[in-house]
Length: 417
Ligand SMILES: Cc1ncc(COP(=O)(O)O)c(C=O)c1O
Image 1 (cartoon, rainbow, N blue to C red):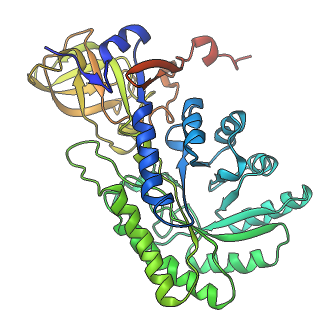
Image 2: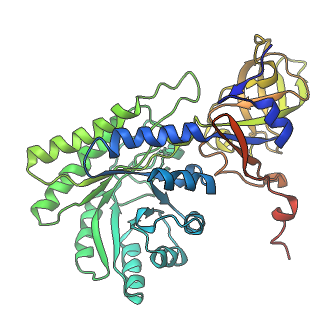
Image 3: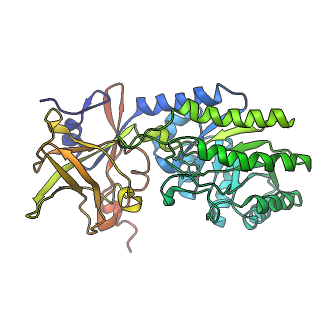
C-alpha cells in the first residue's frame, strides 16, 4: 500500500516534517514550464517575450527562478513590485498592471523604472504623465483594450467582455491614443488585452485579435505604429477530468499566426508580441497537503471529511466554484470506499474544498493531497478565522526544502497597537 509521491517525494513525510496545511511546489516542474513557454514563444518567433503573471504565485524562490530563466514579470500592486525590487528583478522586464493604481503605486513603478505601465483609463495616463514629468522621466505605456468578447469561463475570471471593469473599449482606446499624442512624459508603445483566465482553447483570444488587429491597422493609417501587442494570459490547465486544455504551443502559436497573417496581408509591421501566463506555469507544479480532522457521516446520507485548512489557504472554491481532485496520500494504493465532501475549517458554509470526491475510508490523521493548487492558492491566502498562511516547500531534484515558512501568530498580529 504505497504513499502518494510528488516529484519523487513521499508527501506524508513532508506533512510530518513541516506540518499541515502545506503548499508543496516542484521547482523542476516550474522550470520545465517556463522553458516550454519560452521555447514555443520567445525562441520560436522573433520579438516575442513572455512575462510571468506574479499574481498567480509570488515568492522569493519564484523570482529567483524567473531571473535565472530570463522571463519577465507582470505585477499589479506595490506589494508585488516590492518583492521584485527586493530581489533586484530587472526593472525593464517588469510590466505594471492594475485597473485602479494608486499614486503610491505609480510612484514606486516610476522610481524603480519599470519597463511599462499597462493603463486602464485616460485619467491614469494623465496621472502617469504628470508624475513622470515631476521626475524628469519618460514612462512607456500600453493601453489596455476591452475587446468585448465572451471568454467562456467563470464570470469572475472573465475580463474582456463589454462593460468589464478592465480596460477601455476600442473607441475610447482610440481617444486615448490621441490623448497620448498630446503628452510629453508618456510614450505609448501599443496595446494590451486579457480576455480571461482558465481558458481551454484560444478561440476567445483569436476573437479578441479580430477586434485589436483592425484597430491597429486603422491607427497605422493615421500614423500611429503599434510597437507592442500584449495578448495577456489565460492558458487553461487540467484541474479535473472536465478540463481538456489545448496544448500551450498550439494555443500561443495560433495567436502569433493570426497576428502575422493579418500584418502580412495588410502591409503593416508586426508588433513585438507579449504573453503573460500565470496559471499555466505554476498550477500543476503545486499541491496542498492537509490533515484530516473530523469525519462526519450524516444520518441522512453523505459524509464530510473535515481538514485543517480550507478557505484561508484556498478561497477559489468559495469564490467561483473552482473544482479540484485529491488523494488520501497515506492510502494512495487503496480503492475508493465512499463519495465524500471535503470541508474546510472556516465558519462559512461555503468553505467546502471539494463537493464530491470518491476516497478510501478517511480517518482522523490521514493526509489529504489536493492537486493542482500551485496557482492562485498561496497568492490568495488570507487569515480568515485567524488561520496562519501555510508554509511553502519547494522540491528540486527529489529534495524538498523550506521555501516560505509558516506565518506565526506573532507575525499575524504584529501590526496591532
Ligand atoms: C492582465 C492579466 N494578465 C495575465 C493574467 C494571468 O492569467 P492566467 O493566470 O490565467 O494565465 C491575468 C490574470 O488575471 C491578468 O489579469
